[in-house]
Each structure stands twice: as structure tokens, then as C-alpha cells.
Image (tube, rainbow, N blue to C red; front, side, top):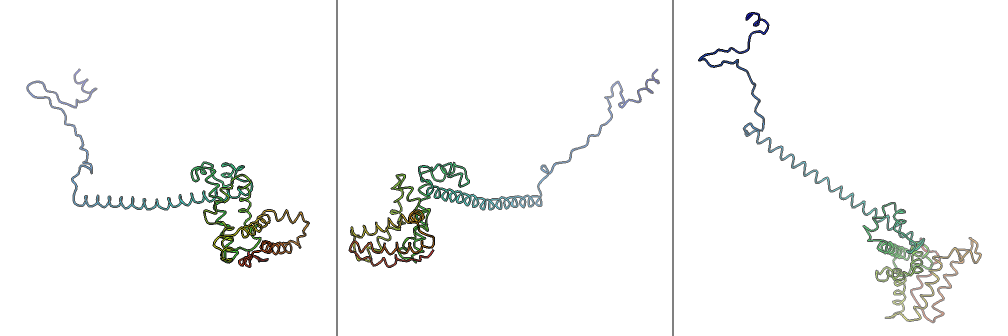
Length: 279
């Protein structure tokens, strides 16, 4: 029976002996885990390699920080582009429909930007309108100086060359925004005030006389009406296209006679009479 059991079960893995001897078990081999790199003692070579790795990481971080600058520049350029698009759109709509009919959403749509940026960059509609008209005034002054060759007296009947500006002036006045329309005086960009100063200096006056103001006001009314309504006026008087230039030159000559009607002489007006102004 014992022999049969041994054959079926096989020989036991352990030898068991009873008595004073202790239990003897078959020795089992357990492989030892290798010591990780973190537990190994740091040699001089290892420390040097670690220092190089840290230095490399610092250099990488520094390069990454430097690459962030162009990103900020791009953001700033993006802001300038948005502001410029809004200013241009507002200037155009100011001339077309006036400040009252303008809406923030319509301006933003024309500019191709989100309407919230109007409030973000200009603190709302009023701030945008003011900025847009200031831009138009500055551009008109620059164009007037260019057309006059640097003089304060621009050529006659050239206001129509800055049609957006003059139409914006008319819209502002009609909508009751006279303060904004004349703000260019305080900004020292008002062309009519430069004309007044030029005429006053050429006459040797310390202060402009009533006659001088009346003469320039009469001429300014003609200038403004021609700048806005020239096509309408020419149509109403049945002027042929071939006659338009001749009519324009005759109007300028009649404007030059306004001071004579007020018994004053304005020497600087010799720069005003220019039938063929520089475009």
C-alpha cells in the first residue's frame, strides 16, 4: 500500500523526520531585485551627468520663454488691426448715416469683428465715434497741407476730395453733435482755423475783424456746399459734363470777389485761387 501511494503521489518535496531533529525543507531560491539607479550611490560621473541635464532643461525653458515674445507681438498687431478696422468702418458709417443711426453691432459687422471689442477697446459707441472723426480730421488736414504745398491756405473747392470727412461733418451737425464736429479746433486740426490765421497774418491784424470773418464764412459756405452737393447743383442748373470744369473755375473767381464786396483785402487769397488743384 505504501509503495503504491509513493508511485501515485511521487516522492515528496520535503523530507519529514520526527524526533529530535528539526524539520528540513527543500531550500527555495528567490532571485534578488537589482538595485534601482535611484538607490545606487552617486559617483562623480553621475553627478556631472545630472548637472548637464539640469543645465539643458534650463536652456530649453529659456528658449521657450524667448519664443513667447513673438506671440505677444502678434497679439498686439492683432489688436491694432481690430482697432483700425473699427475706426475705418465707423468713419464710413458716420458719413453715410450719421451717429444717431449707427449701431455698435452694425459697425462691428462691417469691420468683421465681434461687437464686444467696441466696448473693450473704445469704451462703447461714443468713444469709437470720437476716435473715428478725429482720424478723419487728421487725414483731411494732412491732405489739405499736401494740396497747398505746405501753406495754411488750401486751393479753392478741394474739400470734395475728402468727401468722407465733409459728409461726416454735415451728419454730426444735423444730428446735434456740434461739439464733436468742432472738436478739431481744440485738437488744432481744423483747416478753416488755419485759413483764418493765414488771412489774419497776411493782413497784419492782431485779431480778425468782423469783415474778415464774414468774408471767410461766405467762402466756407460755398466750399462746404460744393464739397457735399456739387453733383446735385450741377444737375439742377442743367450743366453738361463738358461745362463742369468751366463752371467750377467761374465759381472760384466769384469767391475771390467776396472780400471786395466787404471792402477788405486778403493778400493770402492769392494762394486760394487755383483752378487746377493738385490731387
